[in-house]
Figure 1 (cartoon, rainbow, N blue to C red):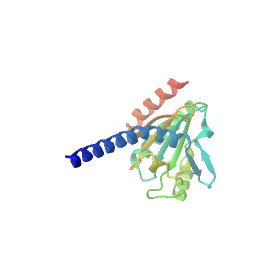
Figure 2 (figure 1 turned 60 degrees about the horizontal axis):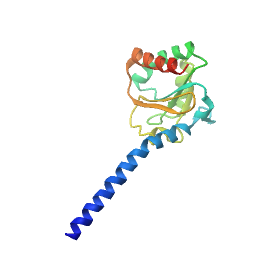
Figure 3 (figure 1 turned 90 degrees about the horizontal axis):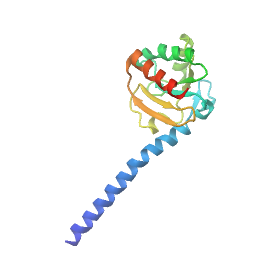
Length: 168
């Protein structure tokens, strides 16, 4: 009987610890995003804090990701429409490619993005397991949302434009 009681108390302690850990995931994601640092394609550090004052899309991608590439033209269009309000950080994840692959892709395409590489593991720390994987950050540098997948060109365009208009 005492053993059963101890097992129950141990189980309850594990449940409480699990719920506490789950509750801190949001705080952890916020801290990871607010302190995110990437490398540009020349190896220089770029901080998310460098873009305060703008709505930022951190778009984790690689050149073989069809849905990622499908949305790039619309995000470029939004950059042209809102150059002072919206920023795109196109961050190569390093699943199958490195900075050299991203550099080649960027040279072949005229998108107004900040081409970066995730050399600090932000993607993994945020729970990223596949791409497209998008993170929206408000003008104060606070996490808005983390999204897996794509709504297609029109859907991603409309969603992002709504966010821009919400903040500006």
